[in-house]
Length: 146
Image (tube, rainbow, N blue to C red; front, side, top):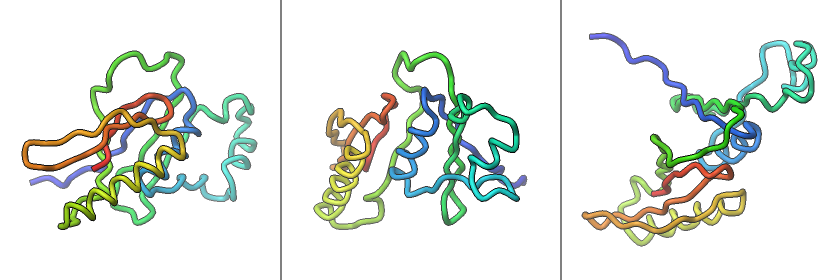
């Protein structure tokens, strides 16, 4: 039996910095640290002779506690054109037994995300009584909060 490998999720973006900031709030993550020896990303980029107009070519966020995958945002020239083939489920209500409290938790997180740039698409209900909200991030990528 082999060991599991680390996973990084890569998301194409118009502005990696904007999406990294948004998803850090959505997932409770933090911006990834700059390379060793640098206090800030700006210092690292200047030292690497990266021109300022390329500073938003990439960004990444990480789980502050370590087990979650790193999420890397890379700048691409084309805009999002169709529905995502993969989407992220944000499980803020998972593990909460009381359905009313679970739904209040979901709604509170949705309100917070709308405050940082999300758009609500719709509420959905599953066959077993579960409920979730479908949203769009600031660049139109679909995701769910449950």
